Image 1 (cartoon, rainbow, N blue to C red):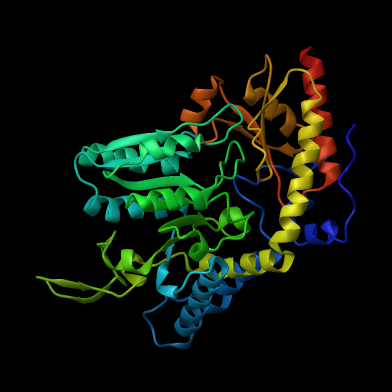
Image 2 (image 1 turned 45 degrees about the vertical axis):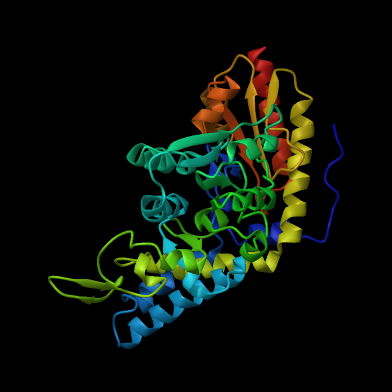
Length: 413
C-alpha cells in the first residue's frame, strides 16, 4: 500500500466540525461524502447566515427605504464586493448575480451571442465540456446558422492544444472552454487558450464551475472575457451564481430578461435600462443565498488556496495510487495537472451498481455520464464512477472508500 499523505498542521477534524451534514450516518455507516464536484457541503456559518436573513432581514433589495430593505441590500452588495475581490475583477459592475453557472453561460449566449454571431461564424468548444457549456452554443449555432468546432483530447484527457491554431479563423467569434473538467479533473492551460483566441479576435467564455472551489482565480491576469461559476460548488448555497464580464463587453450587450430592477424608466411605449450590473438582474434574486455565500468565500479565504490545493492533491494521489493497484479498475483521466477528481470504471460492472454498493456503505459518489455525454461516448464507456475531494475529506475516508471498491471488485470476480 502506498504511503499515506504526510501529516501537517492542517486540522481537518476541526474543519469537519463546521459541516453538520458530515456528522450523520447513512445506512448505519458514517457518511463519507465524495461527491464534491456535484456540490459541496455547507459550513454552519453559511447555514446561520441563511437563517439570519429570513429571521431578521427578510426584505427585497434595491427597492425599499425601510430598515430591513436597507440591511438586506447592504449585505447583498457586500457579497458582490467580496466576489469582485475574490476573482480580482476591476469593478463591482462586472459581477452579475445569476442562479448558477448554467444561467450565466446562457446569458452570454442569448445576449452577446445573439448580437455578435452571424451565419457562417464559428464557435469553438472542447470535447471535455459539461453540457452547460455545449448545449447553449449548439442552440445559438442552430439559430444563427453558425458552425460549432471542437478541440479534441488525447487518451490521458488533455486538450490537443496543437489543433487550436488550425481551428481558429477570422470567423471565430467565441471560444467557450471549461477551466477544469468535471469528469477528468484536467486543469486546462487557460491563459494560453485565451491568448490564442484573442489573436484571432475571438472572445473567451470560461466555465469556471470546477475551478473556483479549487484554484485561485485572477480574471485580469487570465484576461478572460467572461467567467461563469456557481456558489454551491464552493461551499455556498444552491441557486446562486456569477457571470463576470469585462465591463466594455457588458455595456454593449442587450438585457437578457425584462422585469423589475433592470430598468430606469418604463412607459407603455419605451423603456430605458438600468446601469450595470443591475441591467442583467431582472426580478428578485436569491437574496438569502447571495448574502450567505459571503460566509463560504470567507471560509475558503481562511483555509487558503495553498492549503486547500495541497490537501486535495494528497488525497487524489493517494486514492489514485491505491485504485490503480486493483485489477479490473480503469482510471479515466490521467493528465498530470488535475484537481481532486478521480473517475473510474470497474470492468464487467455497471457504474450504477458500483455507486449503489458504495452508498450501502455510506459512501457518496457520482455515477453516470457526469453531464458530459459527448466525452463518455468518445471514451466508449457507459458511464463513470467519480470520487471528488474537498478540504474536509480525510486519508481515512480514502482508505475506507478503496476498501469498499476492493470488496466490490473481489465479489464480482
